[in-house]
Length: 310
Length: 276
Image (tube, rainbow over all chains, first blue to last red; front, side):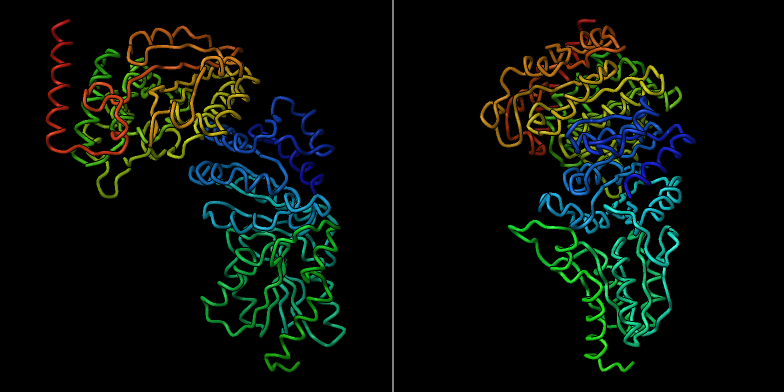
């Protein structure tokens, strides 16, 4: 997904001289094309994420549109106060680009797993929070947010494989739905759409009709779309490669609670930081039930537990 | 808008700081008095060219945001803020709070959390260069602010990118909130530290605004080391009972404090008038 994003960014920079790319010394094999094409608009600021965001803020105040690139944890957590008091407070068009959501950096371990970035970023009302589901949606999201005057955070997944049956559409402040099953909604954060689609297929095999919601835009919060979806299903499963607190599941819970919807919610996410464990992304996600079979089972159990016949 | 000599502007800043902090019953007086001459030097040389194209004026970052009252005074006295607007300092629903907000005319960046300003100024200086502009970026920092690691990230960046259009003014008053810097985190060999980071270092008297103006005007602005002024200052400068006293980081003025401070400032003004 990173490569397609940078590819699109190059096209953007060709058309818009305000686009500048900063990196905190990451992006080997990813950023070279931009750097060689726009040497005057590429700065490796070194391993210094706070300064990267501060510099980006100063550039944006003068009229540039700086993209600040690092691994998601380092791009979000380390300079968080600089983001808050910088582009968020000043409403400046800084784009923070974090690569590797959830367990994408599997064997690299805890320091590299972005498990709370979405929660802290969506807490900033001024910030757009974008988690593309696949490479096509990443490209579209970049195009769709070119002109927004405020800051944005992009959480880019490791792979950009297309989500089956999804055209990659992106609209700021909206979700995208696949299917229109009325039994259960499976609401997925970005790349978790892959598992959600597979789960919907498993459910279909059992006669359960699901709607999959691809949430590529967490903020501005797609409240109206979520309301419309949650108002027509008796149960919903949220799934995210992120802590269960503060992320997509929390957003869905907010919508259900505030509108007093009659919809059972199961939040699937990461419930604790695995300690002393490295592994593949898939194995780590499976530990927390972030796989199609578990999601389908959760849907069936929830419907049965709620006494909902299908 | 009156035109001020740097010295007269500094005096006006001090008087406004005392008057407004008394009225509003707000502290940070010592920190504001400490930088009165530094701000006077910046604003007397029209660092903020309020008459010109706003996109072409120099950028000033008050990284030690807690001294915003001194900044407001400088902005008002030099016309960036309307006359009388400083009377809005710390009243209900004001734009003029204890720390500066960019919504205020003449304030480019909101500050208040220490350690941010130098990075912002680096971005401002880099932007000017990328745009082929002669704009400069000035940042006023406290010495204790150098405790923040982010300052040194920015220091490396500025030197590496040869941001000669960047000037850092450090208010070396030797004090921080709870003690003297030598007792909290000793800032020994500051000049050597900044030089080692690749900066053009000037150790100066932070209370000689005329000399500061001369120096600021003499610094090269094209492709070279960024400049740092290690300005030796006295915390609370100009009000004898505040000078070098830790408690005046936070204390507001009582009625009798206020009367004494006014007397001293009035005496200083008369002495200055007698000289001219």
